[in-house]
Image (tube, rainbow over all chains, first blue to last red; front, side, top):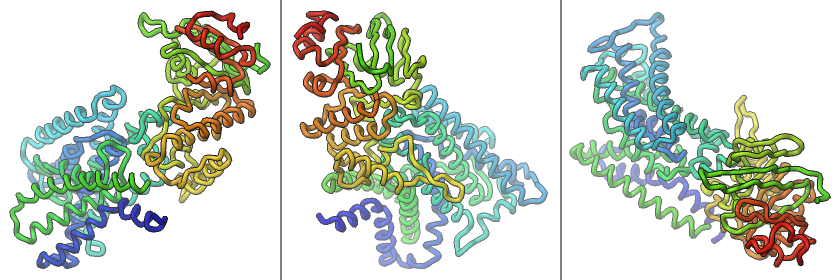
Length: 331
Length: 256
């Protein structure tokens, strides 16, 4: 095989999920009435912002060879904390700050503090006490959601302070600022993973933790940092969720975890650790969102989305196996 | 006994696992620029000893002097900082990243971009290309992930890595297990070249011929004690085999 074909093939394999996304968009544009219009595409991006941000944190931990099932509940708790403080109806306390834009950094800080604290708790148990990540974060998934229920008493907070809502209303180039925040997160964390020492070490730990330790990499510190980041990023997703829904309900974000897993796997991140990149994860998120939009437009029952998502995850794993065998032939 | 200035002195090193004595009083010296072959049957305690020197294990008791100072590494990074490089039997490569990333694992070169440290891939690739070329190792692309390379190529990367980073003492735990004849020969030459720079080398091997080819001195460990410590030129393979199996003890230097 000559080097150019080889390079082209490698490029396609590395960015397979983007090609899938383009293909799906093309097919839907041709066959689904009213699909091909800027508003629909903007809607796909907008609808994927919360899931997208959450997937980043999950992907970081999975690339490092671990697991974080708590991200969904962490997002819900952060959203609830913001809702309780800054909503004026329901269980909201309606706290007013002057000037009112101060609510933006303060609400964000509240969310991030909640998320980082739970992330640090998970990370310490997993890294220092060597407990199983799956079990520790499954427990957090349950108890954090329990805290949300207890805090809210099953009721909801509505009417988020307008200064914070502004991010969901104000548009730039046809997209709400919340969508831009998600895109910015993907850009920043993609750069961190590809260009920084931290990102490089995280990938190496995911590939061979023992080798990383022998090479003098501070494995424990980096792993704990990744869990704190996953918590903080999930909290940011929760903050965006509170803005999107202008408040918080006790069952806010239910089911997001499995969509995040689906997006991460479709995006080419291996659950074995060490493999995958964030741009692919974003494509995975957009792919899910594009399919949801098509289902809505075609008037299919919303229940069918779950079946399709499930099949899509299977297809992604199948594709991954196929990619591996092609690569082995290339090498 | 040796003409080399002492680099690492082991004095009465012991290691117990519960009631089991893996090492019972190990004492010997490794000189600067000296190649010491560590031989012994399976389970004799060679790997345990290497791990103690490399900071992967702590001894139950005993003293080590490294480069004239008291020394005890609590972690591999401490040993590395002191100048001790280790090549383990099971390779320490991350197969999910490329050759360059493995070569610079934990020591990445960065440059400042807008005040932030960014990996300097070009600089790192240039260093790796030079290091591999001067060692005569050929790998098609330095950007290939290590999982796509053969066992021999992997071991070559690992060996080149220690040659490049050098330090003061190199520990090799069966470094040639997956190498072909030609690569082994080159590996042995690399060890000689490293020692000629004044770096101490400890090589664990099962292959008598390799020990005699490359080592200045042969230390045999049997059942957790030093069963023989002789200059290579004063002994013979048969005598060393006897030391390993225990038919004769320390006086083996006179044999052959």
